Amino acid sequence: MTHPKRKKEDLIKEGWKKERGNWRFYENNQSVVNWKKIGGVWYYFDKEGVMLSRTIYNDYLFQGSGAMAENDWVKISDKWYYATASGKISRNKWEKIKGTWYYFNSDGVMASSQWKSDYYLKDSGAMAENDWVKISDKWYYATASGKISRDKWEKIEGVWYYFDKEGVMLSRTIYNDYLFQGSGAMAENDWVKISDKWYYATASGKISRDKWEKIKGTWYYFNSDGVMASSQWKSDYYLKDSGAMAEKEWIFDKSYNSWFYLKSDGAYASREWIGSYYLKSGGYMAKNEWIFDKDYDAWYYLKDDGRYVTGTFKIKGKEYSFQNNGKWISEAKYYKVKPITAYVYSASGERLSYVSQGTIVSLGDAQSKKDSQIPVNISGLSGFMNKSDLVAIDKDSEFVPHYTSDGKYFYHELSPYVSLRVAPHSSAMTIGKKYYSTDGIHFDGFTIENPFLFRNLTKPSNYSAAELDKVYSLMNIRDSRLAGKGAIFKEAEERYGVNALYLMAHSALESAWGRSQIAKDKNNFFGIAAYDSSPYTSAKKFDDVDKGILGAAKWIRENYIDRGRDHLGNKASGMNVRYASDPYWGEKIASIMMTINSKLGGKD
Image (tube, rainbow, N blue to C red; front, side):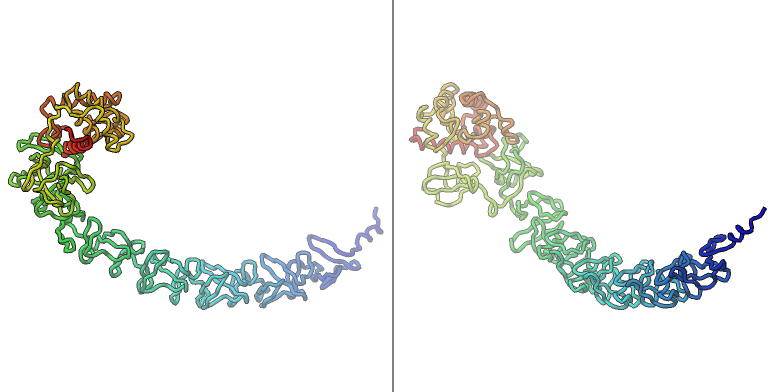
């Protein structure tokens, strides 16, 4: 059964209808074709009545909704188009849209990521303005007008850049003497490395050519190409691997196979000494050769390492002697001991005695020289010492112990700071004259007798314990552990038969009048077992001060006096031969005895 009335109503169509995926607009049951303004918006319907969308028709641009675009963008197949107020697309022209310029080609497509004349359209299509553009690792700059800079300078954010005629920014290169960094910025007071060569731009931005530059306190030289000089000489100056001018330092130049020294001003040292080294004319370091220095009026020999020779040195099979300052001693008469202790031998090789480091010995009978030994005289002893233990000295340039008189006493000058009173003045002496003696007794034209040096120490002193107690105050000695021990010194004298005045003088020398660290810590006042190599560690320890005095007296009696060494003596006889390495140890104690005796009235 049919319903005709209802079917008729179904066939009536008005307004928008979507049919088979297409939109149509009906009026009076008829689909609209051509243009139609609906709700204030223009639409276009083709001859079939289908609404156009996301397309272009007669240069009119339609959005995805079908509405004709007006002053708006539409993307079609990944391409952007723009409709002006008329609804038509822009073709082959520039458009300024919301303050930004865009270009549309002949198809109306927005240009992007490409050039349009001297203008660059970015990925967004916007024309670059006051902006950088990078294309294929090349940088360009668009100015405020949008045009790229060509063949000109641009100051961008306070930094200068240069763009070539193609508009490409220069970088890591030189243009008209201006230096550009890897970033393209013009270098100012800065370094730039180009093809493994270094250049420097001054404050003006221009490179230095054929001139010196002081950069951050260091001098550099740049050649005519502006390249920093390195590993080479420039006149009297040397440029190191870093390019820095060498100052106050040694450099070895392989091309000359020589060392050179560059002074504080950078110039190489020439015909002068630098420490132990001599730089010849031209700056070459002397080595394996003799040098005569007229300023010092002396010959020097420079070894393979360039240092001047000291001591005994063999050159072409012949031995020569040199001072500590390198001067050749043509005829050495004095030598200084090098090791902590060194031995003196007899002609047959027997050890006669030993002496301490720094001791000055005089040359003995030159006719008796041996290959490895030198004949010497020291403190009354004649013998031989190993050449390896000695270094030759010149008494004109180094202090040599000697004797002199002040008109009242005769003194042994052991150093510029140590002087010993050894005897009264005699008329045979010339005041102020230097005298030399191999034994301290025999001199040119006279002899002396030290009243205590060879005195028999088994004979008792004429001073009482009370008198001996006065010594420390008379000598202005304070804080001595030995003060007030006169009775103990006298007890030692009585018990062991060792002179009390000697014991007091001996303890004064070895313990600084009872105030040394060994005296304080070990009650050792006589240096017993205090060997030169380790005096504090090896020194014998006593329980108290009294035992330190008495024990030492007993030890001296048993080890020296009972064995025939009953006097102080020198290195030829007496205690000094074995007791101490100091060749003037006995003389020092005798001098103290002489001083004490003088203070107490001369009874001994």
